[in-house]
Each structure stands twice: as C-alpha cells, then as structure tokens.
Image (cartoon, rainbow, N blue to C red; front, side):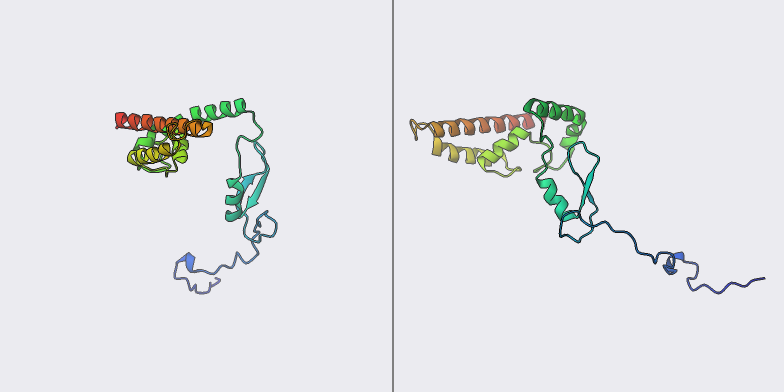
Length: 177
C-alpha cells in the first residue's frame, strides 16, 4: 500500500501552492497607440458594428466623451430613434420618484436641463435660485433697457422661455408631490 506524504495545508485547499498556474496569462493591451495599460474596456468601432476597440479605462472614457449615438442620421431619423428608445425605457422613468433628489435623478426633463444651462445654474438648483438668476439676466437684456437691439430681444425671449419651462416643471413636481 502506497503511503502519501503529509500535507502542510491542514485540510484547507486555499493554503496550497499555485502549482497549476505558473504559465503566463494572456493580457490584451489598450488599442490606443503608445499605451501599455491593460485594454479590457470594449468600445464599438462604429454604430451597429460587432467590431470593437479595447481601451484602458482612461482612454475608454476619452473615446466615449466624443461618441455621438446619432451620428450619420438625419434629424428625423434621430428623433424617431430617440422616441423609440424613450418608449422602450419608459418604465424606468416611472420609478424616478423613489430616488434621492438631485442632479441626474431623472426628475428634470431635457428641456429643463437646457433651461438651467441657459441660466448658468447647476442641475440640482432649486426654484428660488432659478428666479434669482432669471431676474438678474433678464435685467441685462430687457427690451426697455436695450431698445432696438435684436440680439438682446432674442436673448430675452430665450430667458423667458427657459423660465416658463422651469416654472411649469416646478408646478408639475409640486402637484405630484
């Protein structure tokens, strides 16, 4: 009867050596020229293409910052695709009232976010800050202050529209609340 040598792991397999894994493991490098980091973040080479670039995390973020999902589509095609995707993902907006309030929580529409940008406010600004910013900017371009200035009139109309969009959104949230 063959006698086995005594094990030093005391019955705990995790304490055993790594005898089986001594060969080199293949590592894919970042596809960005000159980068020697691990490339484990896939990114599409073109829309609707199965081919992928493999970037490191830093270069994947850089690549995605310039990505335009609607590139190459006409305005009508882009609007149709956006409406299809909004329809398909409509259930997610239903749960927005469970989230914490703040920027990116889905409580503000895209138009409201554009209006906040126009007023120079953060995405989580409250309505008092909206009123204050609107008043200060409207005083600068009001038609009574700058009579005959077509650019100022356009800017004032844009500010008015932004304020109305944000006011309507605030009223809608108060009504739901």
